[in-house]
Image 1 (cartoon, rainbow, N blue to C red):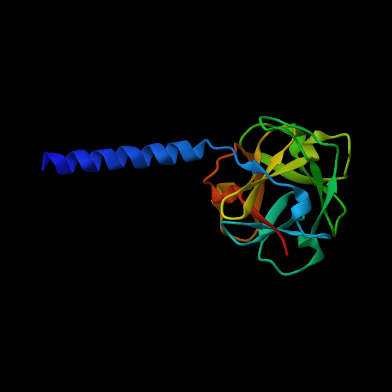
Image 2: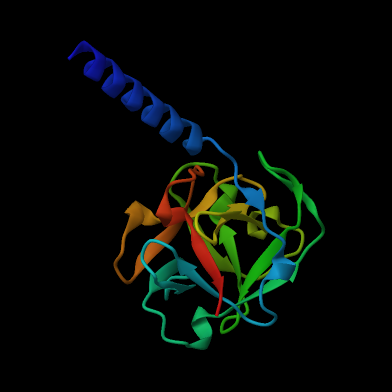
Length: 181
């Protein structure tokens, strides 16, 4: 009986260690050239919903319907630093329908920072994003200035759930997105 308890205890410790270690592994940088040419959809891994501008100029998710407001163009900026990640390719994410860029409001580094749509400005690093490979072919989108990840508020699966900037965590499906068609 003691032997069985010892084995179970070791398995529990090993499992807990693996989970904790996995939570702190940084994803690898993704080369945007691996993505299809032209407009892409940004689809949340957890909800399966597409990102689009909301009427109040924020960004939300809703059921994918193929409309132009769910299509995004990526404009490469100069390679440069992304807070906490080093020097990588950085891109502006431009909504095809509005022609506006995805941006972290006021460059806020706080969890829950508003993600908004604003006129594109190549001088602003709050609208520059790095893409990092992770989680079964999905990607994390990391803001250049803040080092925070694009995140669906509360991990919601519902239509019209807003996006926010939030501390990056690897096993969080609210922060993982498929990019492409």
